Image (cartoon, rainbow, N blue to C red):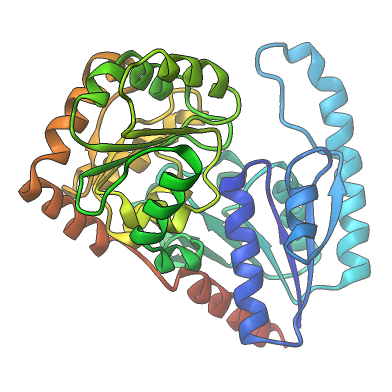
Length: 371
């Protein structure tokens, strides 16, 4: 079988795409997989690193702030549609899989026009623009949240959850403590409440500023803190930490390369509310405080977060309130074992450990039906 997978632009699109490809290869060792991405976006590097071929399209997003600049965008879209048609005609896939993003729109539209069954995977609780535009072209739409009938035909929806890295379940708190004590000269101990703060590879400005302002309080709190700042904010955050006396309980780093171990050690997680982050938190059954980013399309991170909050599986702090409320809520919650346990239990109930396998099965059903 041949499978065309398209999408990207962000890690939230790329990781599910690669996970689906990996699951397809596990279920169908003879699978032939080709990715289609957008030139200049991160998928053009990440997909080959994962061992798959990828072809890039010049497609770009529309400039809403300066509409007169969209003439060149429309030309690139027309050019991408022509290129996608040739890719589909030459590769002749049995199924096309779209995970969202600019390239996915062009590739999935062309595939549907050429009679190729299309499966869409929507990561968020508020559907993305590309997938909404493709809803009538899709045969199956895999979702991670309930109530998606607002956006897609109910008969096409299959609840699968979002794919996550399976190595996350193999973390070790002992290994995390040994690593941080050795590499960061801190004094972490087993059994001490630990706060994990993650803002993505680029960081989250509001979260970082809220933590930086409260560093003296965190240093005296009696808890352990793992603070992933992102590369954009690291220098400023590091300088703020260096100015605090006795902060031997706080790790400050731009990246965390040992996420499974960090999650294993954490009692409470502070995070943005991207689909991938939420799926990881639920898979591992972690208590969390979610701070949705206000800088995403249609405020979809708030929709993601509320899906957990409404089930008592997470606590929400609005971005605008983070400066006053974030650290205060975190210190109160991390010492409330009963509330932590409730959040952990309810989050775990929302986890989908086999989501990539479920999606791959749906893909293969479409391929088998077409054959």
